[in-house]
Length: 227
Image (tube, rainbow, N blue to C red):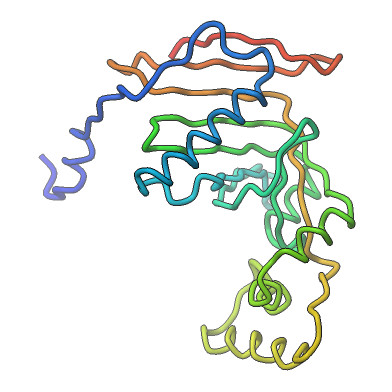
């Protein structure tokens, strides 16, 4: 017996997965299915309010430790675009994730839509988006977010929150009365998918899983996976 009630609760936690299903005749193009699921996620937020970030994705990269050991790392970011060329997120390119994909240009994305009992897994290669694409998105960002990008040496250590706020104040003063340009160390990363898996929870843990893998000619091969 454990004297930690939370651990006992975890072992007994159960959820009935009854929200939907994935038919065998799912679209031949996974991006068509993704568009449907994205639209339903945003509609669910509008109607129910319990899916606050439909565009949130967990980005996983691979870090190589000093002794050569590979170490997966994950963090939540926001998906800002997707099309036939891939899935785009924006970040400080000198951050841990930026350095990791520069060294090992492979990544995975997870779109978790828990209230819908759904998730989408994406795996593929990574490349930087063009400067023009990064400029276009940068111009849409709120000024405070632009200043924050300049002020933060992302993933690096800092002594205190006060020191961090001082960095922001210095940048705010530097650009007072002027437009904030996009820094050279900030831009977009595009994950070009080699596979996409759609997961829909079903009763008795007998979940639906449909995997799409990219063919050389640009079409997709579709398989149903066992749960």
